[in-house]
Image (tube, rainbow, N blue to C red; front, side):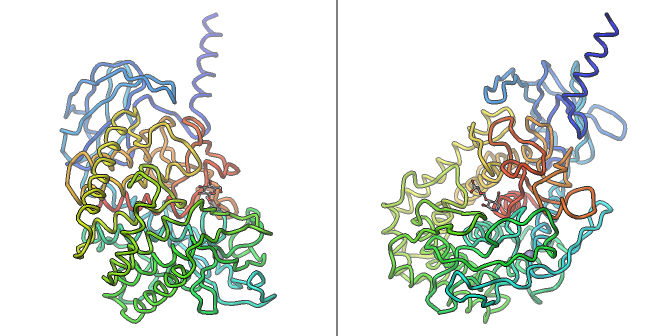
Length: 547
Ligand code: 9MR
Ligand code: ZN
């Protein structure tokens, strides 16, 4: 009988551990913590107190009492929380919880997020299309030859079999398509990170090939995508911008350089056109110090597309027709138009753009600021640019109400983060790409912090990064190659098709569509795909924590 019980117990343990190793009841950011910021762990077994121990000699360096139990419905767990924020020494440590066990080891150091930042930013370089890429990580070599050099065909622009240059840019995700709407929010987040945090991270080396001499490495990578985006407007000079450049259907699990299917410029959409105008305006002001001729080119393109939209106020959706690749179907183009007005005003200072922005706000669907936003709604980006601007001339009442909305929203995210046993500030909302939204909430918090600094704002950004790096119901990192038990089978064609066993490094996966629904399974594109929009949100979150 006793033997049977032992076998049953062993079997149960093996099942709960899963294929990629053990889970632990003590869950935390397995990469580490910043000395001056919050440090939280979630323990899912009854306990009363905890100790922080130094790895080198197992000496106790901090003692604390846990709080709890807190019950969380969506994951159906009771949890106790350990707060060791007051401990600020540097080094390598682990948590020891009497009666429960210890955590994985973690570091406390000012530079703890440097490597994650570099790796997640280099992931954009590894996504480059139209060129060979290569990189080494953890003793593995990742590479592919130049891909998609025939981009793209003009058949859907009424020019059968005509190829026009649409090479370059980044692949969108686990697939190799290139989509204008998603490039928009991605570059929008990345330019904003540069505008807000670059003094802290501009000297962090990314080791990228020199493709834009004289540019800081970070902007060099953004220029790679900008160069491609400049090829997406119709060649007739009208300013209309193709919605995407893809095959009609997804390729199989092959390397990008083996993907020889014809790829087409598609018809334009007003959301793609407006997102293009917004991003080109951002590119113009950020590239200006390094390359004024190129900046001028970006600005001309932005103005041209904006002028077209002004003359065509009606929404022009994108219809898939023959296409089965990503739709990026935007329900309304109002937020993209608002964003274009805000960015063009910020870059040029021209009152007409400001007037467009301010008169469009009342027609924008309330609230002024959203907690939960992604490629289909970039209203927040417009509001943030308006509020962060140093320019004169804004309507003082509108400015005050948007500022207040930003702060109230950030306060609510702080509260939601505290109410979740794993520090996730999105509440019980789970859908395709929701890990990206969690990361993107760092933007709401950091903009609030820029307006009215509060430790709780940046500590909630820390909680977001903690969550993505292991303080979650799976007790796993969601980022390939980084942290404890990272994803091993992301939905990524390169990772599946090459000969290297670990997946391409530094990529965030989309996350579960229910509280416990994430599967580290290659075929599950709805929970385990990588994508530029959520990658950019992660880079933003990390960039704000790099010292
Ligand atoms: O991120 C997109 C998600 O919000 C949508 O629900 C989903 C279905 O339309 O598409 C996601 O974007 C995918 C795109 O359509 C094609 N490339 C991969 C993207 C990430 O899964
Ligand atoms: Zn390619």
